Image (cartoon, helix red, strand yellow):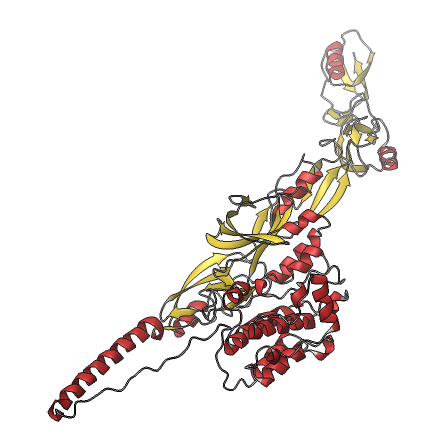
Length: 600
């Protein structure tokens, strides 16, 4: 396997994704903002650099990436495509402009309680979609939580579902510890497989950090931190942040229980308990030192010595109030009032989506796109997304599925097996190899043909059989000309050859029922199962006897012999005129037949 190192900015991946700029680097992958030149949209391409360390399981990665691609949820970063570029596996994901939760925490340290709860609820909603699909994230941490608009009230997006497991090939075996130590569930430290309860634990640690500004366990190295998760109970967040309500603090410690069976069973159970917590009146806190407050005089002083002017002041105040209300109303309408939340069109299809959107006061712009998970005509995605702020009456762009993208099987005849596999990897073909002898492609290892044949269109991931040459066939066709048909067939079958088409033809030299001709000819190369066509003799061709009565005997003899007959003569007188013939005129007889002529 070859590998590529360094910044790949400018590279064209799979003839489709132009890498524009490197936007993130990590131990597992580099992430690029890219342009999908086929669908004319911005995407994120994650190049899995973990493959450089060896032991990468491409089949496991491909299976996991397809499973992730089936997730469709507004709180999950969508996966559109996957493949291999210069030996490095990659996934193509939804591009989310904004920042990570880690960036937000670095700026603010901790979040307001209501803000932390809302963010965690969106995270759990997305996690539950994954849990329902049989996926475990295993690496919940602030770096894997994207905030679409920098944390200013916009939607939370969870990224990297299952990719750590796919890269390391450890979904079902426990495998190496790939989670982040500050958020790792105790059972993973002990080598147990990740479960939905593992994600619940990591999310509880994340919520603890949002509420307090720090994680519960720290240490000199990741190993020490991981051991604390195993050996210590997570303390109540109230010890660090007394303003956290009792019910919320209790839920955090319950979800972070060391035994998986004592936690909410999955993200959905955690979310239901979170939504049931009574936050009551909680003081807003961002983790920053609050600014000191100061009194502001708001009472208007009225001159009691001039009461007749009070009405003018009241009128002035009224006009000012009306102006302020008008300005405020206009500002509200321009800034907020004319906006609403984007409805979900994901459950519609090509035939219903326009009418459905119109009922809710929106227009739609339909765009075709390929999808391996959404049936033809179904809605793949929408922009703006569900819940995003949108102006009343605006247009929502809807991508409608064309079904799985189709690819033409390339002409691979004459190429090596390795070259053919690389070509088929472009559409993730499921390759099987069959070997056969070939008289056309005689080099061992050359591809002779494919099934489906070159040019036929198939879906991504379709099975393709490569037929690879084992060299020149080891057999030679025997000479069966002159043998009776049954004897010829027996001779061919003894060499595992097959009698093909059998034709018949007259022959003056080969007896009826014997082989006149064979294709391929004797000593030609052949392989087991090859067909040999035969031509079998019908005997000499029949000839019509002419009427020679009254002819000179010598002339009659010449004519009959010219037609292939054997002529016998008997002469009574000396004139030599034929008066009788042994074979009647007009009858047909094989060449070589004997005919008597009598002359007088």
